Image 1 (cartoon, helix red, strand yellow):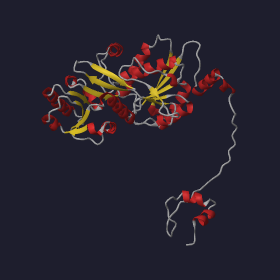
Image 2 (cartoon, rainbow, N blue to C red):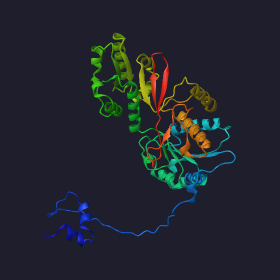
Image 3 (cartoon, rainbow, N blue to C red):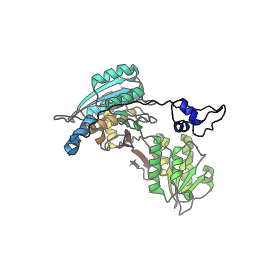
Image 4 (tube, helix red, strand yellow):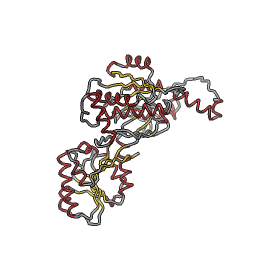
Length: 413
């Protein structure tokens, strides 16, 4: 009845201010439950050198940098020791990934780089795998986990300072706190914002027209609405597009919500009819990212309607490198490349080719990897979102099917 903040605080050996801060907004009255903070004071002694004498010279700073990042100068050939941690070694995904990776290693056999490769089954358990890795001493780890990169593996990477490449788990956020994580698939928020910014730079003077039944979960549509001039944003049903003529002098960027193939096909037919009625109107069509899987079945309609599709992966069969890859795959494995999205064998090839060559050229320094230039279906441009984060791949594609039956694969970095 007679308690005050001060009397309660005194009874528990804390200050009234600390007690109030732990119960912000609480009025002290009968039957009110409050929180009592338990505070412990610990004395810690630590010896810290005032400075490292090497910090005064550029050569000394380089030596410190190499020590921190585990970079060892090599007088002879550089060496890359890659451990591939397979989520399900018997799965089609992992088999194809390893086949593509082996093709890349085969292509690099005369590059002057010593390559040590170890495949590891993630199902063996943390202790067994940690012991195997400690014995192998990898300079790079790659995981094919698609839904959840194991937390113990992230911790192992952080503790040992061995870079860990997450190739397929788009939702994993370990890269935000672990400086040795490499997030290879651009997370959705970065992907959508970068695509929206790229489109705005090129089409800001276009009217942005959303067509079809609105999808509230469409994050790309939300990013576009955020960045676009509201006076140039419209919403139309597909039926409206049929009946309402386009302005002959108008510029339109049409974005359609449908994702099913038959609905996408029907929408493109309507767009073709509208542009035929008003041939002087300037029209471009922006597809949702999943449209890229229809690149063969709807290819003619994509070309006829000047369709652009943002994508993290794209493997056009007619590119020279991809044709060579298909031939080498058949020669080595006596089979055609299985169709999937992404093409896992191409992903394995890209990952091995990029990181082995890059790390060999950078003497093992994961921070010094250049942007990729000879990949098959992916593009890599690594950057740190913050000073203490891991590396994030910021590169995505904008695939454009031009009316001239050509395909332009623009890289957004």
